[in-house]
Every structure is written in C-alpha cells, then in structure tokens.
Length: 156
Image 1 (cartoon, rainbow, N blue to C red):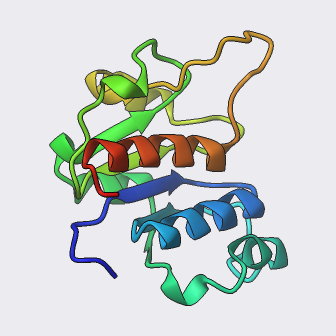
Image 2 (cartoon, rainbow, N blue to C red):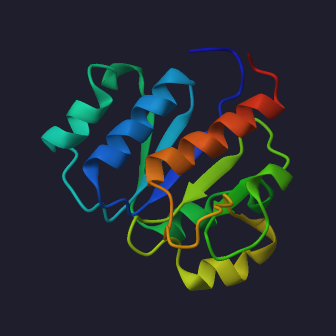
Image 3 (spheres, one colour):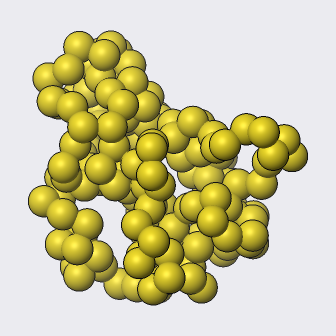
C-alpha cells in the first residue's frame, strides 16, 4: 500500500456481482478502500464476483456496513460525495481530497431519494449526451469519478 491517504469508494446495496468485482479490482489497483453497504444483492462467495476481481482479492481492503444509516452516522459529512443522475452538477466541479468517500447507489434504483434531498449540495452527476441511455454501468461510473479524484491530487 502507498503512503498516500486513500480514497474510499462506497457501493450502497450493490446488486450485480460483476459490477462489485470490477469495482473491487479498481480499488485494489489504486489503493482505494471499498465500502460495501448491506444488504448486498448477492453472496460474497459468488463466482461472478470472484472472477471479476480475478486473483487480486488479497490486495483489496473491503469494509462492510450493516446499513446505509450506519455508514452515514459514522462519517464526516464534508468528506461525502454522492453520485446520481438526479442532479445537474457535473462530477468535475467537485474538489476531492484524499480520504473522501465517493458514494454510488444500487444499479436498479440509485441512491435513496431522501439521501439525495438531504445531501443535495453534495450530489454530482456524470453527464451523458444521449438521453436514450438511462445510466452508466456502476463500475464504469466509479472508475470515472475515482480517476478524476486521483487526477486532482496529481497522484501519478
């Protein structure tokens, strides 16, 4: 692990094993901590989850949370960044710092509406030019935002 304070990627109630596995691999490659908020839509023994992470699981730091409320009550609000298609502010306007939490909702529903309302000033989106596409893949979205956060810190 590097000596740089890592970022944190948070998947709230993820449902699709390969998305979580791919995000885990991304986190391992960047020394980012992966937080998984229960309930999960799969078993962590799922073969698709394992396959997406390949043989890198030993290099991935994962923190499990029993609920989103449990996660939120234990964090500094100033370090939370929420990503949703339900806002117009692009992720490139966020000013990320090491130790921040990049939070993504479940594949089928995104983040809870009450969370978006409560943290409206901390919500960002990844702009898309084709309105016929509903949303980006969860793992792709996490990668886009995480690499922007890393770019801002001139880590590489």
